[in-house]
Image (cartoon, rainbow, N blue to C red; front, side, top):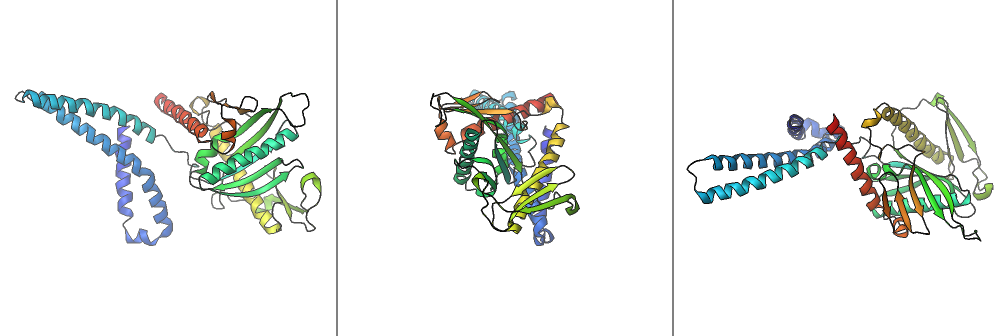
Length: 358
């Protein structure tokens, strides 16, 4: 670990020096890249230097204790310093282990969230709307920007499916744990017998990819245009503004009809397609990692049931980490940091354990 820390410090010093180079300052792209690297290395180097200062204090205190001529009062002081230094060394060592966990390269990306009603018909569609509202309120509270890319509403006020982008610092790092099947248990308003119905909604959180990272060959796309339709299937536009894009090599299909402009719908559909393709590549890469070294929190299957929302009990249970909270309405109002923090901590612990096994 300490060889790695020393190398990190050297890289940090080199990056710091390069940032003062006039040629680098004049190259906006290179300067931004180096500044990002500097910021990512900075907390590791600061903590490593703190560790080194405690090691130095420990050595000096030990030398004082080993001196035969030192008086008792000085030795008592040295012993106290030694104990404190050793406690600090142990504490900072654990912090360094966490800081050295390889960062998910997608953590700083914006995201595209896709929510689809599953089993349960109208109830599933209504809960899809509830989840959209929850994520929207969470994003707004963090100052993130939300943009609906495509929506297929129902007459009862739900969504068969809805896709939207969220732009903001650390969006993927926080929302990546939401991918999977969300199960809702509640009594529908139309249920006269008071029976609890179970419905499911699928959430996919995709890191947003840009044109540079993922080049799509236009000849591999089939683009269809059609008239947009609203809830119940009625046409809401006289012009063919809706767009359907099929990626022929993979069979992926994306539709977008949220905008009145065909051009804007095409741009949004391409944004979703690019992120889905990027996500497919990421999933393939993750599948190559040995299963016993993969964190089950952050890379869960899209088909995995991850969470239950039980309305009669006012309960949310996350099945991956066994977390249960009895404040369902509060959580559905976008206050989900408690859940995400617990998932991030479990993910971190799993990665630390994997590091220890290496």
